[in-house]
Structure formats: C-alpha cells, structure tokens
Amino acid sequence: MSYETLYRKYRSRTFGELIGQRATMLALQGAIASGRVAHAYLFSGTRGTGKTTSARLLAKAVNCLERPPGASEPCNACASCEAINRGAALDLIEIDAASNRGIDEIRELRERVNLAPAMGRSKVYIIDEAHMLTTEAFNALLKTLEEPPAHVVFILCTTDPQKVPLTVLGRCQHFTFRRIGEEQIVRHLAAMAEAEGAAADPEALQLVARVAQGSMRDAIGLLDQLIPAAGGTITAPLVRDLLGVADPVRLEALVAALNSGDASAVLRILEELYESGAELRLIVRGVMETVRGRLVAALEAGDQPARRRLSAVLRELLVLDGEVRRHAEPRFLTEATLVRIAAGDLVEAAEPGIQPPPGPAGPAAPGRPAASPEPVSGPDASPAQPRSVSAATPGGGQLAAWETAMAGLSPLERGYFQRTTVERGETGYVVTFRYNFHHGRAILIRDKVLAALAAADPGVTSLDLRLAAVDARPAPAASPEQHPVVLEASRRLEATITRVEKVQR
Ligand SMILES: Nc1ncnc2c1ncn2[C@@H]1O[C@H](COP(=O)(O)OP(=O)(O)OP(=O)(O)O)[C@@H](O)[C@H]1O
Ligand SMILES: [Mg+2]
Ligand SMILES: [Zn+2]
Image (cartoon, rainbow, N blue to C red; front, top):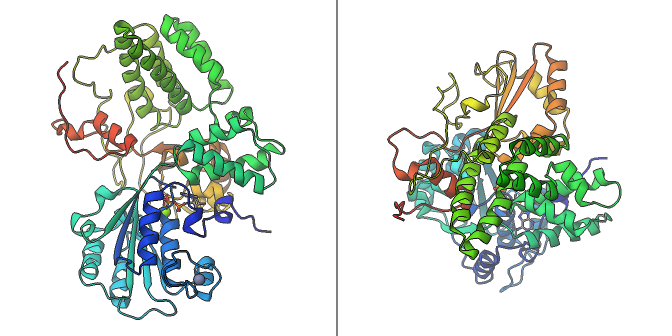
C-alpha cells in the first residue's frame, strides 16, 4: 500500500479551501469570473504558503469545462479538472526551473507555445522556482512574454522575486503570498488531525505552528510525522521531543542564569536541554524570544540600563542564531557565546553601528558550482570533520552510494534532501541545504543516512550537513545594503531593502 502524505491528501482543490492569502484569492477569482485572466503572473513569497497550489488552481479553473459563466471555482469533476488533479493534463505544463535551470524546457516551450490547447481554453505554463532560470532561459521566456499567443497563461512561482529580471517582472501581474498566521495553521492542523482520527492537544499544535514559521507545508509535514509517532494523543512533550523544541520552563531558567551572570548554571542548563534532545537552533531561538520579551518589558517600564543590556544580548544572540544555522554541530560556539553573555562581556554596541558577525571569509572550496551559495563557517565553530572537499559530478559514479542511501528513505525524508548540493569529499559526503527547515530535519536522521551510505560504500565515514549561507560574507567594501545584519534582517522579515540609513542616537 502506498502511503499518501497529508499535504498531498489535503491539497486544496478549490480557492475557498486555501488558507490566508485572501486578497490574492479574491483578485484571482475576480479575474477568472470576469474572464480577464492575464497572460503572465508572478506568485512570490514564503515557501509552503500555496504558490504552486494556487497556480494549479488557476490552471484548473481557467480550463474547467463545466464552470458556469461568472463562477471562479473549478468543478473538480470534468475531464479537464480530473486530468489536472491526476497530474496528467496536456494543457498544464509544469517546468521546474531548479532541476536543470530551465534551458531545455524554455527552448521547447518556445517551439510549442503556438500550438493550440488540447482540451481546455488555455495552455497554462507553471514555471516553479522561477528565480533559478538562467539568463539565457529568462531571455527566451521574455521573447514569448513580449508577444504571448492568446491561449497561453504563464505563472512564475518563486521564493526569491529579487532574482527575476525586471524586464520579466514588468510583464507579470505580481501577487505576494504571505506567511500563514499561527492561529490559522493551528486550526487547519486540528481539522486535519480530526479527519485522520488523531487526537491532538492544542498546545502541541501551537508548538508545531511555531516551528513551521508560517509555512503550511512544513506544518503539515510535521503533523505527518507526529500522527504515527504519537500512537494516541499528540501532546506538547511529544512534539518537543520529536522536533527538538526546548522546554519553556528550562529556557526561562537559562535566561535567568544569563541575566544573573551565573555562567556555570548557563552551561548546566544548556547541557540538560541538549541532552533532552532539544535542537541547538531552537534553543537559541527560544532564548532570543525570551530575551525579546524581557526587552519589550524593559522598554515599557522605561528601564534604560536593562534596555541597553538586553539589546546588546539580543544583538549577540542574533549573530549566534545566524551562525548556528550554518552548522551541523555548533555546540561549542553556543556555549562560548552564552558564557560570554553571562560574564557580561558584551560588545556593548559601538552605537549606532552594528557589529558584523565574527569570522573571516573562508576561502571558497575549489570546484564548487558557482550557482550554489557558499557554506560559511566561523573559526570557533568548525565541526571536527575534515573540510577539504573535492567536487563530484553527479552521474560520475561517485554519488552512487548517495543514490542508494536516498532510495532507502521514506518519501518525506527524501524530500529534505531534494534541494541540496551533494558532494563526495575525502571521507564522506558534504550536503549543503538551501532550507533551514530541511537542514534541521535532516540532522535528526543523520545517523541513519550515514549508516546507509557506509553500507553502500565502505569508504564513507562522515556526513557533513551544512546550511548554505545567505550572502553572508560580502566583500569588505560592500555597500550598507550588503551588510550581513541588513541582509539577515531583510531575509527574516521578507522585506525589500529600499534604503539603509545610519541612525544617530
Ligand atoms: N495557504 C494554504 N492553505 C492550505 N494549504 C496550504 C497552503 N499553502 C500550502 N498548503 C499546503 O502545503 C502544500 C504545499 O504548498 P505549495 O506547494 O502550494 O507551496 P509553495 O508556496 O509553492 O511552496 P514552495 O515555495 O516551497 O514551492 C499544499 O499541497 C497544501 O497541502
Ligand atoms: Mg511551489
Ligand atoms: Zn472542471
């Protein structure tokens, strides 16, 4: 029996089922109902918020054979809807720009774009991960966008609209998909758990929603792991245990120790949290949230000394958070930083500037494909694994063990490794993740993957899971827009930088 993942099973089949994104849904439905569907759309925004799903819904609604005039929802029953739901529609062409950067597909698209649709009204092209297209592919696409045949609709989906050339952007109607609120995620998860006959404590679902950080896909993926693991009711301790979320009571104790300068208590509590299975990344995050809460309280109380101290602490934690994400085992870095904070040894903001994160720019690993971002490591944090890597070409035989190991994983687990760069190093494999979430999940099954790799290739003794840095090491003379703190802030807030200004205080 093949197991259907929850997010496949509960994939929204109508616009009405999609959660959040209300303004976007209204606009799209309005266009469909009034027959004013544009030739090109750009759906951008956070991962796992419904871009691809909406693109498919749009394709389905446009081509639905039974949709009455003035209606906007697909019927999900006619031959066209049915074919799209089965993933077998001739009039819906999905191009994954991430797979080979779209060159062949766009070329083929240009050749075939003038052919009439097979069954529906329009031929819909969904170009997923559109930011990955090469310049060449973008140029080819642009030619088509300049004079699109009447029966064609393009939908470009991307998490990274800044990488789409303005010439292309200018020809698209742009919709932004927002992070989904925790409450909405909790409600959706609760409904899904109920439909699956699984009981779940509200607090447990709240935790899942927090960890998912606005991504419905991540939230559903986690629920998918929790239901079988729980056996009975999904409880908060189970979620913490499985996801490596730190116990809030102990986090409070950790922050109290930080504040009172009790460095040995800091180390002890950190050790306890770590031993209980909490992930470092989530511990750091939890500490940040707690400190932030105290900072807000200090601001409200007008307590200036506390405000200064807490902002300095938060600044340190922000840097630490960035570093922690890039490492599989950044434990010593975390310990060192927290002890330093406890000892009051803070980089008391050479105000008004912001300190750049520590660590020199490491030399780029040789032979790394230019397309993938560089993983970065601070000097304090290098895991005790050899770092020399020789790039292997996929299909060159060197990655055979990798393929074997992947084949042994569940589809969900395999998914974590999908958008990664895999290289065979001297002693084993080095995997660079694009997504923090995937990286975090992969760490949990690291031992299992390493064992499978070693079984397939006795020469493999290490598996280094890294997180790609987000433009973390700009050239020394970079503009203020390129400052690591600015980049990190804009990444987290999903903001576009319009201006960076030095504030005098
Ligand atoms: N807004 C939403 N409402 C309900 N379910 C959603 C929503 N967004 C995502 N999902 C669920 O998550 C799954 C994946 O969503 P989808 O592929 O549309 O995300 P995406 O925005 O394209 O993500 P990515 O940027 O990673 O490609 C869907 O099948 C659906 O089950
Ligand atoms: Mg998508
Ligand atoms: Zn239909």
